[in-house]
Amino acid sequence: MHISMTELGQKLRQRRELLGLLQSQLSALSDVSARTIQLVEQGKGNPSLDTLTQLADPLGLRIDLVLKETAKMDEQ
Image 1 (cartoon, one colour):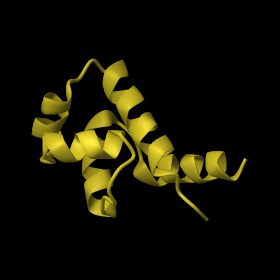
Image 2 (image 1 turned 30 degrees about the vertical axis):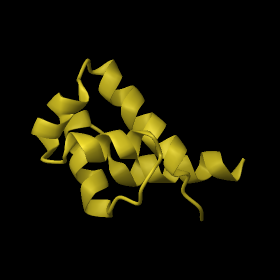
Image 3 (image 1 turned 180 degrees about the horizontal axis):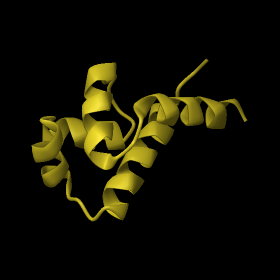
């Protein structure tokens, strides 16, 4: 199974924007730096599962489901 970091970042960014949050606001809610959020949303870097979970929680997402969806999208 291959996870597309670009697709994952896009999903997180879309959800953040849907909720009307700035990266700085998500940073405060998740205790993840704004720079890390920027890199994740751009599909760069290799964030840990803990970091992804910290980002997903305030967005109301389950990271396991997001990863599963992202893996499926990459296989198509």
